[in-house]
Image (cartoon, rainbow, N blue to C red; front, side, top):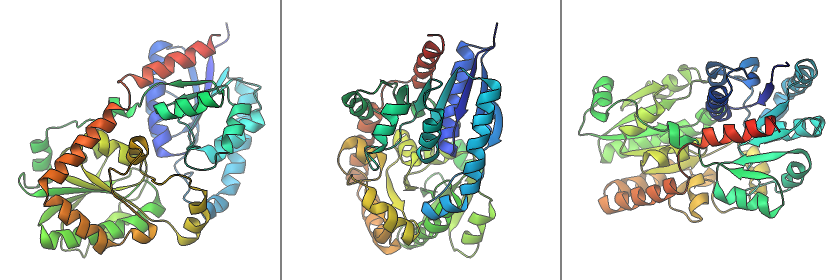
Length: 377
């Protein structure tokens, strides 16, 4: 009897995280399943056979894509070679739409293709819906509004809820973690989450650090920088060495850092949803290379970029994007918010409402059952 094989293609750390948790559930339900993957540490730990590591694959803007074009061409050829040799019964594409939708076109439904984590077609590049309709067998989505969008387009879709609900939790009591950090249990603690890509750290962390300096003059505070596993520590330490701040760089403890924080400054992306689930009030900050911004801004068709605001369909979290990402402006607004306990409570209440819209826990198990159902059909 032939071994059942699935091929998974991710391209970024958040995709690797979600794909890794999905693979754990797939292997719990079907232990003899062989999973081949383009991914990184999370997929590897979950039990997938990684044939290409994505650690240098994440891109930031159009010009970064151009620089890495030879890697993408090589990777596409490699995936097609693996498909030909290994003959998987099913392919799962995870996010990473610029590459994955092109790959889907080449595969051209010679195999069933499931798309896990929808491209943000509701925000920009709506034309991708036509590609999805033509080349994707089924969408598995995390948000109810995505399910409604795809059903309207008569695309096969299942809403499973958000898998972050299962993993976004502190692993250590607040007092214990503060003590471990050498932080005061009564002092104001602010987390800085500047992103997971090198270009984000370069563009956004200096803004956050200037905001931290302004805040500290008005409200003495302690600060945590949540370090991405993919980024070298010196990218952070070089930026904080001359600062007169009580500040620590912490790796691999994202949720524990949020668990002890009274407030957070967050780079737009998955971290905004993680912060919301943890119930920590926050501001969204985002800045990119000016040329990239001028190229991408006209494509954005929605008024907000923060997922919490998109889900709420209104601005519940302030966004400081590109030209508005000025430290003095952000610090002034943040100091005003920190001094207003009713405003802090109002933000927390709204974040609870957002969390309740993400569906019940168990998204990974539901997705795994859908995938195995398609595999066995």
